[in-house]
Image (cartoon, rainbow, N blue to C red; front, top):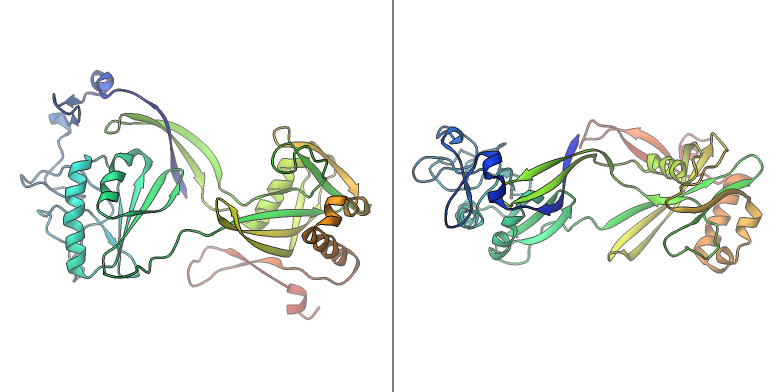
Amino acid sequence: MRRAVAMLGFTITSRNLSSLLGFRFSPNNNIPTWPPALKLSSTSTAGYKTRNRFRVMSASVNSTPVNENDEQVSQDSKLLNAVNDRYGGVIVEVSEPMDSALFASVLRDSIAQWRHQGKKGVWIKLPIQHVNLVEAAVKEGFWYHHAEPNYLMLAYWIPEGTHTLPGNASHRVGIGAFVMNEKREVLVVQEKTGRFRGTGVWKFPTGVVNEVCVSGDYRCNIMSRIYFLELFYLQGEDLCTAAVREVKEETAVDTKFIEVLAFRQSHKFFFEKSDIFFLCLLEPLSFEIQKQESEIEAAKWMPFEEYAAQPFVEKHELQKYIVDICLAKKDRNYSGFSPVPTSSVFSDEKSYMYFNICDLNGQ
């Protein structure tokens, strides 16, 4: 699935665009008004209507307001479109430009309606091009829940007392790649940036499981008078895929993911978030090294004993455990967790479950 990422660029004045885009501006507030040819039909089912029966803007075009009996609310009401979530709350996704004062008024009416319906949590997803609505929502009691490159998620709790809404994602996921050739040489790098810059430390290729940007385009938002860059990227990367990718990016060596050897959890690591680091075993499929110029100072195959003898490795308990685990895997019967594609009740899409296949199969 492709998602749009909006990244703020530079500002322009709305009047400079009026002749180009055909908008008319009111003399007092510089807010563009629709020309007659673009007036919206009173029969539209998206959004809400004003008292004169013409629809002004919509917060979502994918749903209609519902009452406590899950029936459609009269379109004469100034209410934001919302869909019910599975936990007694509602979700609003703003999809069209809206004046902030009008949004505040409609939001207050919507909250009153949701309170009457007995709703609990309220989620408002604001794409970055609708940043002008953030202040109005915060003044009504909404708080920041999380942000992505292309949107801000706001939350609100209607009942009295402490809310039970889930918190934002709490962990970042990283990988370290243990790659050894038939000469018992391990693939190692020295980094140009970060805490190891200039230390002379040789380390395994490492990285973060992330999202992959694939394309982009420029768009213009008239209401907020800004340009933004719209990118499309794939949501979600598998752990095993990330490990292979990081090795390829940093050293140009092709590898095959074998298994997870161990993992470590730490807290208050990256912007006060927790971190889970997976030590992964990969099998080399190529051996010629070409270092990544932007991030890697040097890369090479190093005898494993030389790697283990580094003062940095000998000094830190975590690094010593990593050495012991890697040796146990190569020289003894240590079994890690292999990725197995599985489906679940939550989705027919395959995801990976990692477990000890050898012991499971009695090998």
